[in-house]
Length: 254
Image (cartoon, rainbow, N blue to C red; front, side, top):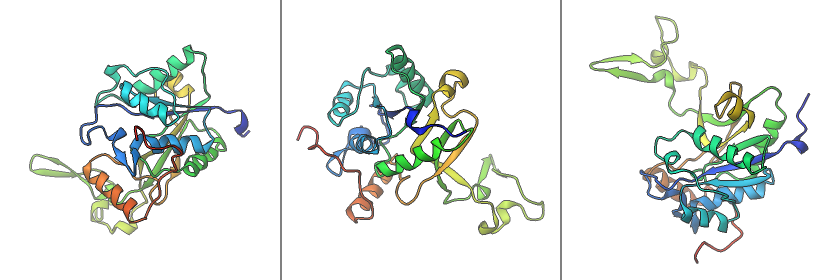
C-alpha cells in the first residue's frame, strides 16, 4: 500500500557548521549576492515539502543569518558535533532528539547541504514525490553517474598496485576492459537525502538498509567543497549555464 503523501511530515535539516577548512566560512560566504546558505533555505521554503526548516549550526552568527532568510535555529549544535570529522549521524540524531523533546516529531527528515546551491525547489519536490511513492524503502539518496569508473581505479601499497574492484574474467579484468563495456556506476552527491525518522532511533543510521536512488541532472548535484569547486560554480553562474533559487529578501546586512 502506498504512503499517504498528505499525512507524512518531513523536516528539512540544513547542516552549517562554522569550522570549514578548505573554504573558510563557505556556508555563509557571499555567492551571487547572498550567503551560500540562503539558496538552500530558499529552495526548501519554495518546495512546500517541509513542515519545518531547521538549520544545525554551532555559530550564533550563522544562526542569525539562517533566521534572516527564513529558517529556524531553535538551538545550537554542540561544539563536539561540529568538527571536520563529526559524522552526520551525530547532528541529525541530536537535532531530532531535541526537537522530539520539544514536542516536534516528524515522519521523515531530509538533509539539504548549503554546498549544493543549484538544487532547486522542483528538485526537492521531485525527490519527495518519488520517495513517498516507493514501497519498502528506508531512504533516498541523490546520485549521478561516475565520471571516472571505479573499475579503472587502483590501491597502491608500497611499490605494488591492486585493482580496487577485482572483477571480470582473469583474461580480461575490468581495469583492462573498455569503459563502455563496464556496468554503469553511480556516486552519491551532496544535493539531498531523505529518510524515515525511525532509521535514526531504531537503526542508529541516517540511511537504514534499503536505499533508493534519486538521479540528479545537469547542475543539481554540483557540490562546493574547495576553492576549485567555488571557481567552477562562479563560472557556471557568470556564463548563465545555471540559475540559483530565487531569494525573496535583500542580502543580509545590506
